[in-house]
Image 1 (tube, rainbow, N blue to C red):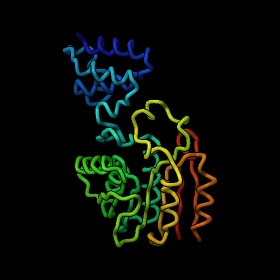
Image 2 (image 1 turned 90 degrees about the horizontal axis):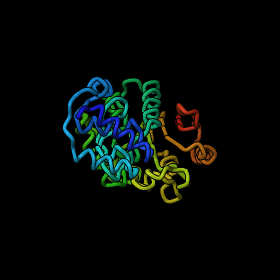
Image 3 (image 1 turned 180 degrees about the vertical axis):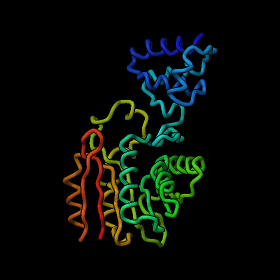
Length: 275
């Protein structure tokens, strides 16, 4: 059997269940150890042996299980990260958040030794990429999910970076002040706005905002834990712009802020400069 025969047969079957061709390529590449898309398409004539494992995993794809949970891996800013079940899968918008954060940190602090906190670290992709970009920074990360803590530690080790990871709601119990706080907290309001595969498989406490887990207010109301000047960088839902503006006006003084859009032209990021 040739690789292209398997590929074509899975695409044909997958169309009946709305399985994307990209996910099928990821699945095949994972099982047959093909490193990238170039490698995949140059090896379509390669002879392969049939595998019950890939058939089993393809059945999970047909049921809507995210590919990242099946192969326990995702791409983020061109690098591979481990993703375990029970931990939120990083999205493209968070890649944009990281790039935006790097821009503002570089502009504000240059190569100064700063304290950076990633709140709700999940897989650790934010903290890890900030540490890679600013080796002099002391980077801390928190999450309330034990699986996320474990996942972040695995990825930090995989990417050879030293970050400090704690199980806490927002702030770790440390006697320090932060120069930068970055967070992609739960921000979805309604379940109807979420795809079924996300609802069925991803952790709801990392998805949905409520009064009890409004991370935005928990951070903004504790501005005394930050140095001056300092940066707060958030990923947000477009519907939160008005409520977040009220929070800023309630708790912050002499601060400037800007809402910016993602690649899809949706208001997705909030940058606060605390002076």
